[in-house]
View 1 (spheres, rainbow, N blue to C red):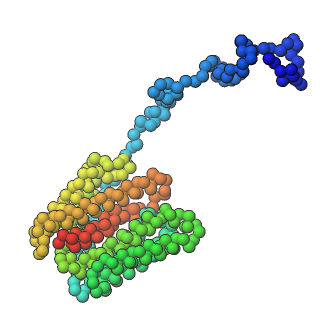
View 2 (view 1 turned 90 degrees about the horizontal axis):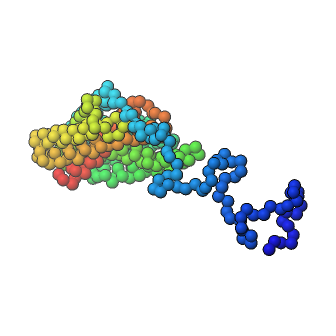
View 3 (view 1 turned 90 degrees about the vertical axis):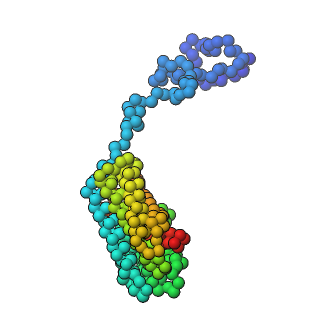
Length: 348
């Protein structure tokens, strides 16, 4: 039944004074849902609801976008002169540390401490310029101060150990974070910079563990074996990348797996040869110690390459050229130093 009052009251009457009824036999029932397009729409030719295909999307992918997605990213070219230059820097750094270790003796450790301090300053320069944490100058100054404190503690403590170095690293990390919290501009990025600040401070303190290693029995011989294996591994890895960077580990990283493997193997072989001539070592024990330090160094060098590629892909501006390429060998020696100390204390 229709209501007594028409819902169209107040509207203009129809031209023929008649009221249109429903199109079909739907008297007494509400009208069904509309499934057709709106009159005057752009897709008036579609008369039914849109259905999804079974097991596939409702729309076909654009062939041009599919071709772009399938296109491979071109690999970063390997620059041979650059690889040779980095290899030479790794060799010079290894020779300097090995010769400096020979000057360390009872009551004469200050010359070796000065050599370590110089390497630590290079590490601070390279890593702060490459990672660019907030309050860069504050982090660099705090790291340099931590290096001096750690070296002094390693030389002057009565008992040779890593505990004073750990205290120096913790204090330097806290000071670096507080220095970034002072300025409001740097306070926003302090969460992102915790990792970079910790890496710089710990890397600086890691070099001081070589001074502690020179004060324990067999420490100088262990440093000779480990630092030689590390230098040979980094040198051979970079030389192999200059000649045959294959297979590529990632298109954005100009490094090859052959260099990493061959460098670690030749570093281990060199340490085994040294172990047959040094007192207190055998070829087997020297090869074990050299394998750990050489593999640690080449993997740290490779990780630095991945980190640099990640920063470039994230859109960050490139940093100082010399700092970027010094970062890998310095990081490799920094990580190999505590590994050498651990192997000497635990297995020798």
